[in-house]
Length: 55
Image (cartoon, rainbow, N blue to C red):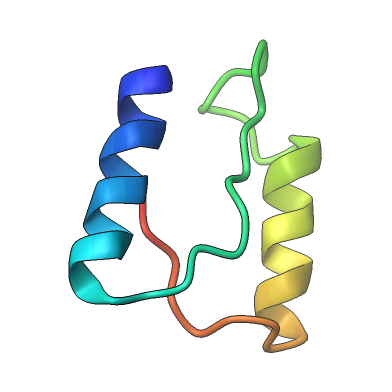
C-alpha cells in the first residue's frame, strides 16, 4: 500500500495536479463495495469535490 501511495503522489506531481486526499481502506477486501473510504470517495465524486481519481 505504501508503494502505491508513493507512486500516486509522484504521478500527480509529474502531472502538475493537486493531490487532495489519499483514500485507503486498510483491512477491507477490495471485493466489497462496503468500505468507509470508498464510500467517502464516491460521495466526494458525486458532489464534484474533484474531477480526477488516480488508482
